[in-house]
Length: 222
Image 1: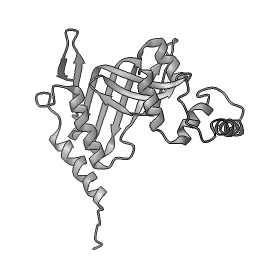
Image 2 (image 1 turned 90 degrees about the vertical axis):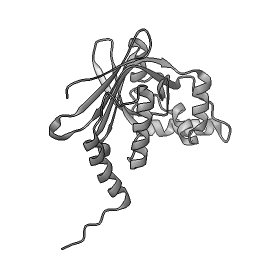
Image 3 (image 1 turned 60 degrees about the horizontal axis):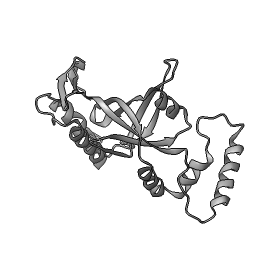
């Protein structure tokens, strides 16, 4: 019989995938603070070695009620919300600025887990955006200046020409943050933790923000 070999990542993938599925999720034992519960799940995703564990689907809605989704990267999170960065002239930004709301979702297949986050959105302070911009690779800093995100362009050569112009403009000097580029913070009023279980009887635990402060925690049917 041929020997079955499982590498280190494969072992942790198998262990975590089935351990968390068997263990499940209980509304009586989750952390009463959804941000701390998220922090634990996020760390589980990191330990498991999930590629792009910080990738999340951002959904917005147009003034006409037309939804759109795309994947962005979570860059910061704390008790105030979840932060990502983008061009303020992009489609997502225009829709966020118009409606004031957005939804996020994570899917970590290796852990049989999904997260859904809904809430209001605000722009991060300029000094926070400046600090993050300066932490990015120089190529990404220049790219933020070169790309008219979400706008129609004639061809690939147009973009490459624009990038070369920006590179020559700043030469070897510090690249400041573009005025139309920065961060958004999604401030959740509802977070759902989804853990797969056998026979599709999944665990879905919801945190719903209470007007008086704090969170209501309850289970919903899969």
